Image (cartoon, rainbow, N blue to C red; front, side):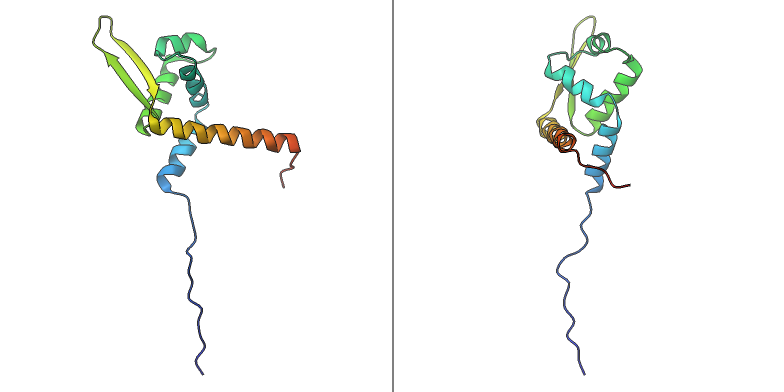
Length: 120
């Protein structure tokens, strides 16, 4: 007797490896969101960023900026001046990424307001 087997139409969906790594790296860096806020407020030079945020060091900022550039979220502009001037800005892709982070923040606020309890 032949049994009809139902053909599976869907495969297990998993997050994109690159996208997952990007979100984990950027959200895992406690300074990335602060850097985005600085850029949004017109503070785009590294020295000014360090002076504007208590506890942010040049070394940590440079690492954060480097990671964001690797993922295409930020871009670096170097001006041929003496002394050398460097500024950072958000790329078009970065604007989309930051919009998603803003939506996550809104979702978290909604969760907090509704008092959802996390299962343990």
